[in-house]
Image (cartoon, rainbow, N blue to C red; front, side, top):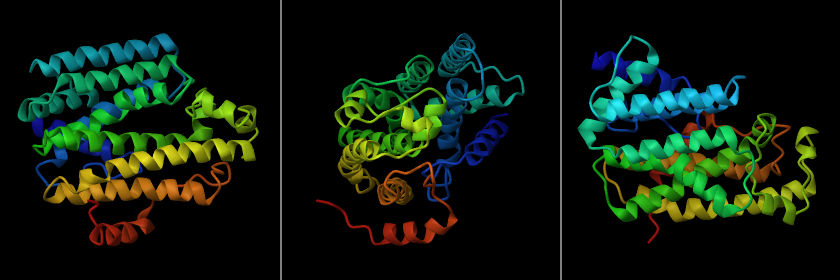
Length: 289
């Protein structure tokens, strides 16, 4: 039963595009199913909050059910009815037990997904970064735990990288999020540069929006710089996974800046053609003292 549950998680993880590798072959083979279980838990819950045309009440009800299933998994009593969802929790329960994972990290993720259902704008950087603390950072900490890492310094660096990846995805998905009713660029930044949300709907990348996103990108790059040491502080194959993750995120940010943030013409993504460059840069990686 557990093998089938992990197989389901791996299938779900590999079915989604991300700016960073998920349960990739860079990870130790023994870690991949556990990372996939975490990813599948978060991916399905995020879809409840973000995808389709469900009413707010229906989304919150699905997330409440996810919390109930999480409680069962944390107590070692996951229910398997043969569905993908139930098998995710069979795998997750096994992963939580094997690696002594803190349930609060999963609860933080769910709190962020619930927030996505009800919050569509962020007043300032502080409120947006708090959202990232719960929507992105727990995943990095969980990956570290699976690899046996519990040092506070690694947690802090991982948090910075995860926040940077989340922010990069926001700027990359400016138009997509707008059509879902959300704008993640802090309202203080939008106002400071005189940007007009209506221009997103018109698919116009104005000088004001370029200035606002330029400020946002600068803040994002500072998080990437702050988090870079996490790839130097771990050992083995995880080091290569984290290097690839960091490099992939920075490459997307570079492309956003290079195109003047005009995601209306072309939304920057990563593809197979990027792999050789990322691998080369990972090999030539120089640790920052």
